[in-house]
Image (cartoon, rainbow, N blue to C red; front, top):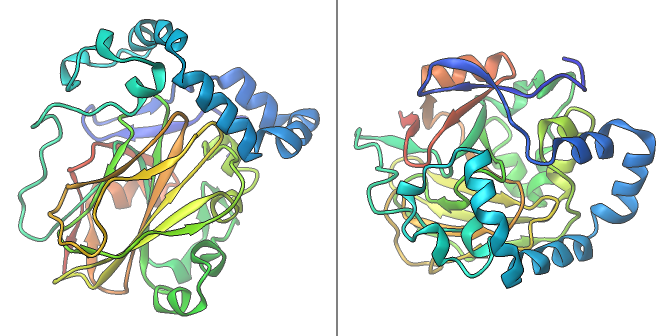
Length: 300
């Protein structure tokens, strides 16, 4: 796949391949596809202070004027919002908006494992047999990603789903199944873009960006690792759950402030089976678009 090729994904609901409408595509392509852009990214854009500054601007009341044009340009369904668009005090407040109850119903299938967020999802059934991740030939470093040798060994032949959220998506993330979550562990890092345009050039972004790791102990599928990954212009990764208190499937875990971002969900070996459409698209190195609460796998 050409590094400058459009970003395509498969839409589960429309059952067709779509081309992603990338927020800020021009500047993003400049930062990842030109030498000067890459140097600028490393020197300035990936630094936490850059994203904090941008997040501050999105917190100011003047940023409210961006909300209506954003909704119109990206054809967001405002009827899903828990609060009307004109009620938000800033663009950031709109960005991490809540949805109405029932807007994202949880799949009731017994044994269902749910997507943790709205977005574009890519599955790896066996981390020891990865032949490509966005681009053939790139390998995923699990030990670097979780920063724990024992955990890396435990999940070395397990499965992973990377759920990538674009700025246009609902930006709260949820638990994939019922269980008891540990306290979150912060893993410091940079804030590069996690758009495929960037990952095609440098997959290591996933294990050098800022991350938050939580262990979710479950009854039927062992311990699931959930890892939220920060990215350029993500002001913060906020956790809203209570550590060590039982949660239900699809319960809110937290939210991202402004920017694109991602959630990785890791499973122990032999505990789940991915849905056919997620598996089919992932084997072609193509993401599947689906909503939080929809089924991504079933417990074995």
